[in-house]
Image (cartoon, rainbow, N blue to C red; front, side, top):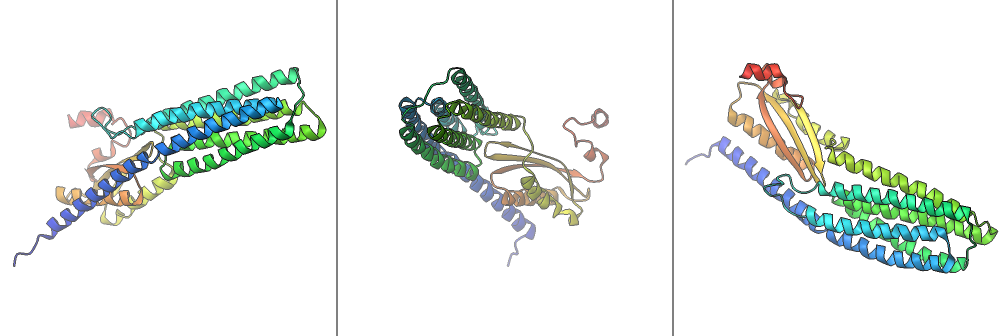
Amino acid sequence: MIQPDPTFLRNAWLLSQGTRRVADDTIHAVVAQNRLTPYAWLSIGAALLTMAIKGAAYLVSGSVGLLSDALESGVNLGAALIALAVLGVVERPPDEDHAYGHGKAEYFSSGVEGTLITIAAATIAVTAVRRLLDPQPLSNIGLGLAIATSASLINLATARILLSGGRRYRSITLEADAQHLMTDVWSSAAILAGMAVVAVSDWQILDPLVALVVAGRISWVGIHLVRRSTEGLMDTALPQPVLKAITSVLDSHASKGVRYHALRSRQAGARYFVSVHIQVPGRWTIQRGHNLLEEVESEIRQAVQSVTVFTHIEPIEDPLSWEDEQLDRAQSAETDIA
């Protein structure tokens, strides 16, 4: 009876595991992205509804705080439309011109949204200062409060749904939209509280003062979103918990005389990218080294979802193996190779 070659069986198993995992990750990413669009439509619907409600509350009460709130809902609508367009780009599969996919488009969306939030904050501040210089009495405060409260509850529910979806699918676009809506909720709460105090004390100046505080809070959120988007475009390394999971896999092979260096990582939307150089004893065969790389890549994909891993094998005894820890290899090493 012919006995199967153990090396052949191991290679076949590694190949099947790697292929299955890559397929699973691809399916997971595609399904995840296809599920993002409904969230964008939800955000658009909520923005239209709350903008109409808050506009009505402003017309009823004359509160500059509610006017600023309505303006922010208009910004929410613009941001939601941008998110819808960007998610359509993100859903596209990798192509010849975009071999790493289109995930980075999300950073443009969140960056634009952060900019819009900051502009909205400036608009609110200008409107509030004008009202401070020319105070106007509020009217129908009770009705205005009731109408605006309903809009805030709609935004709160929508924000929680978007935030949950953003964290589940690692979508910075949805997270930015959710954070934007949460700033709307908090600003609305402050404005409603200010209106309630005005109703009791008749201190009319409180309304624009609250609007100024809200503008400051909103601008902070906008700046934070712009900064986070910039970090994504600048290929910032993956979060420490993710890197720890990756290094734990690499460290687990140290007992075999295996070392690693030049570990680099970045994120493009929901997709992680990791590259690392694996150093093995020079006496190893090419097949043995290849088997190790397949095993390491498979283990990393099991530890971290939606990750693409690039590995490079080197003989640990060769001094040149240590010359490429930086992005630019030392000139002397290149000369020696030549």
